Image 1 (tube, helix red, strand yellow):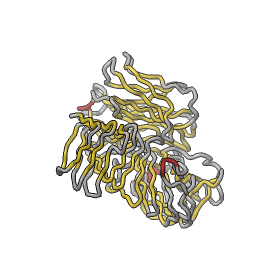
Image 2 (cartoon, one colour):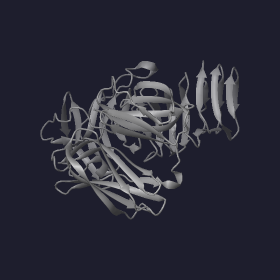
Image 3 (cartoon, helix red, strand yellow):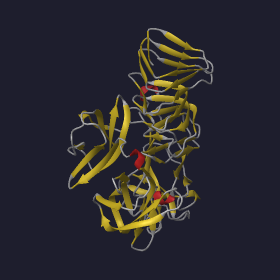
Length: 474
C-alpha cells in the first residue's frame, strides 16, 4: 500500500498503523499523537511545503521494518522524535534528517555529507553496536556528553565527547583508511594507524538554522571493537596513545587506555581537552613494533563455484608481510588451516590474491584470513560467511586489472537497469548515472578526475541501496 498525503492532515490515533510506503507532498501533514506508531515496510518521502510530519511529545515511533533496503528522503528534511530501525538490509538517507531518540534493533543507517543525521539537544541513540550503527557522517546539538555510534561499511567504530563547554553543533565521521601525513610524527610518537581515523568538526558553520560555534575544552574517547583489526598490539598507556593531527604533524597525547588485545575491544580516552574544530584523531604508538599494522586489507570474499570455493582478497599496502593463512570452519568456532599464500613483503600498490578451496563437501562455510610478518607476528581479520545455497544471489565485486578497476554484477539479469553512484571517503557524490547490465555484467570504473584514495560504488533500484563495495585508486 503506497500512501500519498496531499493537502490533508492525518491524525494517527491508533496504537500502530502499517504502511508499504509513505509520500507526503504539497500541504500534506502527518501528526502522530500519543503512543501511535507508524510501521513502515518501504520508503519515507517528505516533499511537503510545510513541516510534513509532526511527532507529538508522546512515545509513538516511526519504525523502519522492511525486508529490503529502505530510504528516508525527499525535498524536505524530516524530524523524527522517536524512530527505530529493524531491518538488516538497512536504511539510506536521501535528505538531512533529525532524530531526538533513535533506537537500533537491526540494520545500518547510511548517511552522506548532504544527507547527514542530526541528534537533537538532549537526544540519544540506543542499541547500537556491530551491524547496528550509522555508516557515514552524523552531528549532535547541545552540550550533553555524547557517543557517536558511527562506522564505515560494515565496521562499527564509535567516538565519544564529554565535558563539553558551549552550545554548538559538532559533526563526527569515521574513515576506514589511512590518515594523511601519517609519517609526520612528533616524538615520542613512532607510528599512527594505517587503517582508520576519525574527524570531529563544525558541520555547517551554523547554516541550516543549527548552532555553529564549536565546542570548547571537550574530552574525546575513541574505541576499537577488535584489537587485531585495528592493529592494537599493546594496551600499555605509555605505548598506545591518543594521536591528534596538529597542523601537519601528529602529536601524541596522554590518555587513559582500557580494554583487551586479540579480538577484544577497548578505548583510548584523552586526558587533555580540545576545541572541537576540525580535529583528525587516531590511534598512535610510541613503539613502532607494538602496533605494526602490516597490511591494509581492501576486501575478502568467498565465491561458490561448481565443485569448489574461490577465496579472493586485495590489499592496498603491505609492510614486512611474509605470508597469508586461510582458515575454514563449519560452525564459526573451530577453524582449521587449509592453505597458505606468500605475501609481497613491502608494497604500496593494490595487490590481488586468490585461493581455491577444493575440499568443500558441505554448502556453508566460514573463512578467516590471517597475515604473518617476517618476525612471526600475525593478525587475523574478521570471518566471512559463504552459503552456496544462495549462490545465485545478486552480488557486486570489485576487480583490479593492471591500471583498470571493474565493478562486476553477478547473477543480475541482462538488461536490468540500476542507478549507480560513486562517492568518496567524505560521502561526496563523484559520479551518478543509470546503467543497464550488459552480457559481460561488468562496468569499467572511470578513474579520470579521481585523486588517490578510497571510494565506494553503490547500486540502487527504486531508490534502495542494493549493493555497495569499496575500491581504491592509486
